[in-house]
Amino acid sequence: MASDDHTTPTALLRQEHELILEVAGALAEMLAGQPDEPLDYDTVSRCITFFRLYADACHHGKEEDLLFPALAAHGLPEQAGPVAVMLHEHEEGRAMVRTMGASLPAAQAGETAADASLTNAAADFVELITAHIGKENNILFDIADQLITGPACNDLCAAYGELCDELFEGRSKQDLVEIASTIVNRS
Ligand SMILES: [Fe+2]
Image (tube, rainbow, N blue to C red):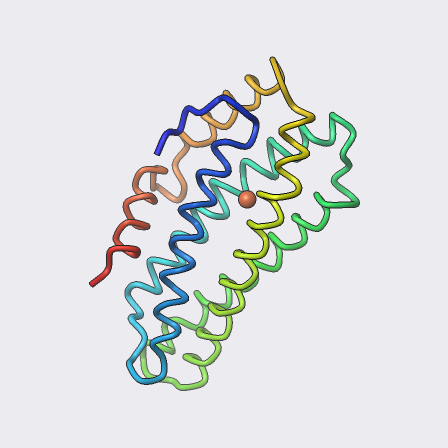
């Protein structure tokens, strides 16, 4: 996966969406296997790590700290309209992933209520993030591609690169891509 795609202000983010959707799809498959087979809690734990650190810290971090302010500078406010909707959905997703993480230990210990809380939050998150990415890819990002061009686009992509080079709770972006690979290629 190229991390240096500077052709548009959203190319890298669209690439990251593909990986997020792959992991969400793997989680959806695991949930669909319920209740006939026990949930693979170790893989669910990896999903939670991936969603917290890749989807949120690394990916939403670039949207919230870099793309959305750049859109605001080009006349698209953060307080209303599509950007406000995206910010609200990021918060909803964070709450769902927090619920997943909080429920996991007791679910792993065999508590039925915790398992239900975990699976409900996981299903809600899969639905939310799938629809959310669709809206970004098909609406907001098309607007961004028209608004942010030339030097502004180059500056934004350079800033993306700096954020991607950070560590997220000690993990590099590549570490998180490898976690995603473990999830998607689980046996
Ligand atoms: Fe996104």
